[in-house]
Length: 347
Image (cartoon, rainbow, N blue to C red; front, side, top):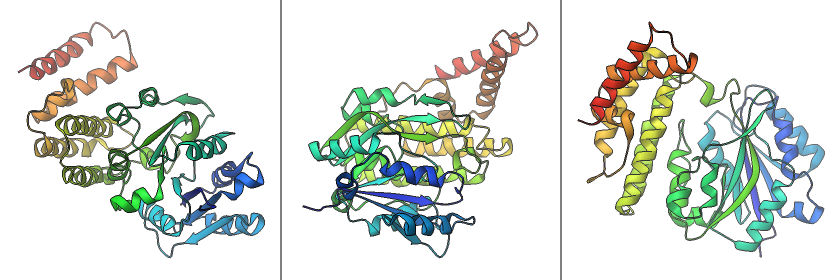
């Protein structure tokens, strides 16, 4: 039996303020015997700060970290692939270098892997804010229902699913270049799994709102999400999925793209109309035959390619969030936008 049960791949780029906490958390609380079954591979993605030197120093002091230095920056997905190519464990866990594991997490993961040997092990996490506040993720409740239709609603990231390395070879799945690289990886690896384990306890702290993180950066690169969904749906299409799966993946895709569209921290207002138009084309291209979802108002406005009503509805929601009791002068505008959107959704 392979003495290395788990390979932890940590891509590293411009996170010198968080890196030590991440590395320390990976083996915290493990006995020497338990630690021997884990290998940690850090991939320096040509980080512009001192991360490369920090990794070399950590490896020299601890002796249990393997470091891969890339000559040029390739991005998160391809950096993960570089670490995966060096992995020797039966399983691989992709941990982001600005995140960290809570006490006891690694021990719990190792025990679950040994007991069940699934193709994929899903774990729960907490969202960690820069002020130290921890909160559950809205999707975490799906772990209580181990069926695939429910589990596909879990936040689609690489770090909340620990994957048998042989499973990745069997389905020939790797990360793709570009932003939103988790999209064509996270759901396919789950859909193709013959056995899925669920560890319904917090084993990961996911840092949100960090300056420099993709999800907190305004950029036209958020348009790359469309290409990643094209790749994911093409992969699924080759497997001739059942209608329920096509419908669910389509609904989840549109929901996610709408989240990106509505996030002022990702899209500059001048790009929002073009993104909406691209989303409308994406909707028409991938709409499953006989789609029987219950998409709601925003889905319907995308289907109708009605950006004006979408923008009005978005503004109405934002005004309501800022002032739960809007002034009499504002109420007619809010009511009008909502009524128009509702009318459009039932045509």
